[in-house]
Image (cartoon, rainbow, N blue to C red):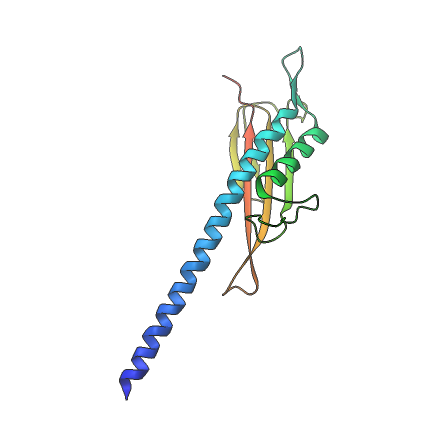
Length: 161
């Protein structure tokens, strides 16, 4: 009489562990995809940099923001509302939760340690940079209907010391 109960308990534990593994793998795949796209987008946004004759770098905020958004749309298959198109590898709309430009005209002198406690970012910057943080919701079996994936990226125009 006890054997069917034990077999059922073992089967349920196996299925539960398998589902947890699937959810973790899905979350990790989404994070890697977003990290790669965000790295490319911050790199592309830095194309808005122009070096002035005095050796100072200025990053145009409008151009940088547009390049950042266009790169995310291209690399993640998003429409103009940052929602996934058919065939997109993401499951929900991408939200840009932080975008920041740090150039020679932002009131900081390089090098310095950049810290943003809201997004747990700390990085030693040797030159002008673009900071971007994006997030998406992914399907979740055990955490309610969705789990949030948030990914930061920084790309800098590093100067030789």
